[in-house]
Length: 277
Ligand SMILES: [Zn+2]
Image (cartoon, rainbow, N blue to C red):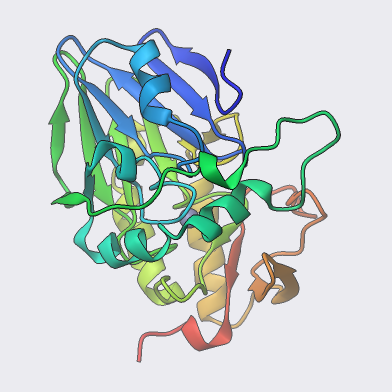
C-alpha cells in the first residue's frame, strides 16, 4: 500500500494510477516495454511505484506539460512531450506549484498529508519530441499519438486501436479548460476536434487525466457542437470561476460539472481567445 498512489487494473495489461490530487496516469504493458502515459504531480516516487507494477523498461510520454501530468519527468529524467509544451513542463515544475496542486482545497480529516519534501525536485529533462502520427510499439501493443491542440498548444492524446480506447489527458472532458495562458483559441481547438473525430470510428471510450471512469467517445461530437456555438456566439456563455480564474462556459452546469441539459462535454474559454487573429 502506498500513501501517495492508488491503482487499479482497467485492462489486464493497463493500470490506472491515481495521485493525491485526484490526477490520473496510465501504465500500459506490452511484451517488451511499458508506456507510462503522464506522470502525475511528482509528489512521492511514482517511479518506485511503477517499478512495483512492472519489470519492463518504462517509457514516459506526456499528454501535456501541466503540473499534474508532468511530475515524473523529473524522476525519469527523460520523457516524450510535444515540443510546444516543453517550456510549460519546466514552468510547472516549480515545487510550490506542484505541492499546491495536491494540497488544493485542503485535505479531509484523517487523509494522508504529504510534506513539501515529498515533492520530487525539478531537474533538467531530456525531452524527446512526440508528434501526430507517432507510434509506440510495446511488443504486441501499439499506441498511436494524436495531436489535439486546445487545452495546451502541445496537447497529445494516445490511442490503443486494438482496445478501442483513447487516453485523453485533459483534451476533452466535462470541464475542458481553454482560455489558459497556454491554451489555443476555440477556433484552433475546433480544428483539433475535427482531426480527432476522424479516429472516432476506432474508439469507444476515453480515459482522461481526472475522473476514474471512462467517458464515451461521443463526447467529441458534443464538444464540436459547443465549439460551433461559441464561434457563432450562440452558446450559454455561463460565467464561472475555476481555480481562481474567470471563465465562460459553453453550457450551464451544476457544482459537479453536470450540464443542465444532460450533455457531458463542456468548454471553458475566455473572450480574448475565441478566434484566431
Ligand atoms: Zn491540464
